[in-house]
Length: 138
Image (tube, rainbow, N blue to C red; front, side, top):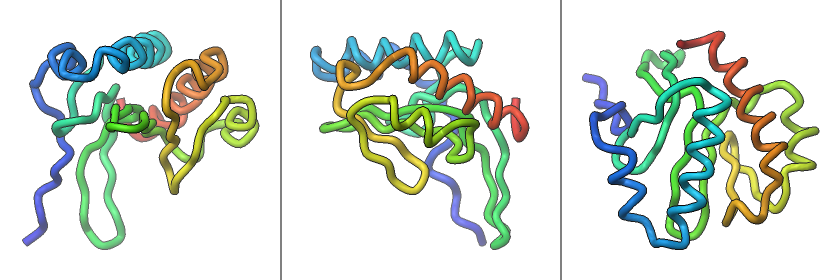
């Protein structure tokens, strides 16, 4: 029997989640939400207990495991923000070079605070990731 996915869309309040963050991180989280909402045209939803996501797509791995995930999203972890976006969006590497102080993982992008990044570049990244993600979802 397949294991249930932990990260599923919930009816939990995004604003209540943000209000639980340290004051210094609330403004950054709200800025990220504003940019993602503006570029996606979608309302933010909670995914699991700590991811704010926009849109949804269905995935299915060769192993047979499948589920739904947000097209774009972020999580305000204790020491950094984590962006969840397609690793294949248009001009990804070019935009990341201009993005500002960050680290990348396999498919995530990490940064400490909004002041460390170029928000104009971030808007382009989100728009491009939405174009890529919409091929697979809403």
